[in-house]
Length: 185
View 1 (cartoon, one colour):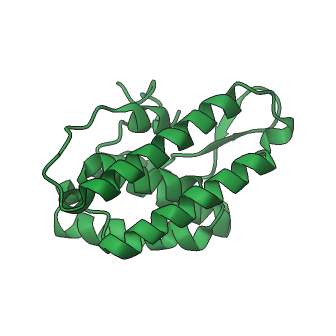
View 2 (spheres, rainbow, N blue to C red; view 1 turned 30 degrees about the vertical axis):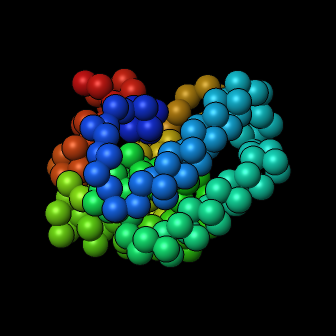
């Protein structure tokens, strides 16, 4: 299935020579809180997979703090906040209920990716693209999202040009569809 768990737990080479170390530390603390909330969430039996209102409120608070920090530093780059800080910004935007925030984060991450892919947590880009596309037209490009009809079987949301999906995934160092177990081949 998807490799999200692998991406958020993947060990990244820490870069302590960043331009904004205090901002980086704040982002990493927000990231930890986000992940702790998800672990609690997945341990619960949720009715129709709806997020509790408390989680939405916490996500909104984290998103507001993250974008306040982004406004201060201008870019989620490795030079500014390290790859782990970049990943933290990505996951907080991804988990928000704000399509506009995801689109803005995607724009900033893509800009860095096309300049130098090692300047941003680029493996997160397909997740933002797919989430935005699913919200817009119910389809995705990279096959990062699935759903469950309640029958216990996960199904991928429809993929645009599915024969090319693994080529697109490879560009972002994601494993081929169907071969991932927490991101490992």
